[in-house]
Length: 376
Image (cartoon, rainbow, N blue to C red; front, side):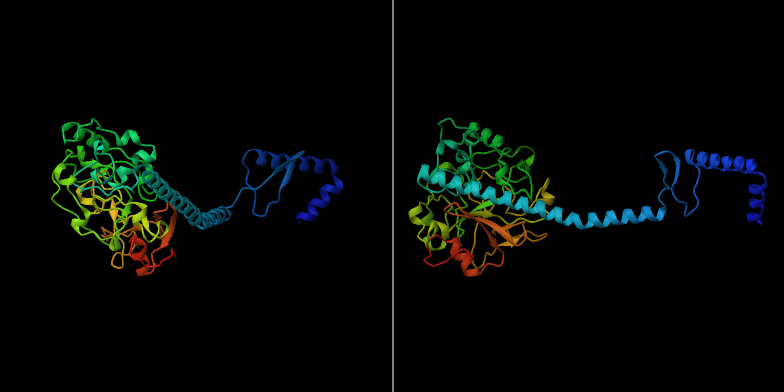
């Protein structure tokens, strides 16, 4: 019926058809320009020379695009995270390398490797220099060789007494550290909740906050100390041999240590110098006693001999990757998957697998046990 009417109009009234066709084109143009809707399946139409009118996206098409983008993000995100962790692992190894080089410079200047200090009850004191007489930690002894001599010198006045001057200096130093003493996968070099600070030459930490470290020197398999160090005179009288330290069962840093290269009979390339220490993964950044981590991360990095600054290694002290809810105060470990970073006494740094053989791990920790060993 429509076709017949159309034919009649076109055949008998050509002028009338032209007017009708003009009105249809005008209507379509207005709908395109002012928000008119297209029926499903409408094709693109040309309204002006060089101008195409496109239909809008349907809801289904929009949802498909969003789903595809979500899938791509889901595929790329793990790869980005792995790349970032690989970069942090490399940076962590670089921190260990710098500490190794600093220890070598210490040996070149002082003729011994950095001492492990006296005890956690005594902070560093620059007036005692280096070696067995220095009460401060292994890390404290490295400062002048890490371009941080001004931090090491705080409180220096030539007076070897535990007076208010050194106590004030140690309070100031307890809030200051170097970024390389912290693993980038764990935390920044800023103060965290800490106990102590009320020892021989220090006052109670202001706000109970102090800087901490993520690396420790290697004591070997032995862990011996004098808990009665309550004065400078007591600390100066410390003798590692009287405490029971044996060359075949000890490493390169312990109570009042002063190890020379000649005492490392197993070779500097086969003896641990320092490494990443184990920490609870859920207590990296404590802000109060409630979330502070046991005895392996509760004190300032500048205090003397303690498992905050030194760790042991042996058959009974294997390394572990950081985990939640597990306290291993005396062990080496790391937040990184598969392996931890360890620096040898020759300054070289290696990634050591957590599944390393027990005997090999112990032989690398002791400096003079006479056992042939190679780094796996």
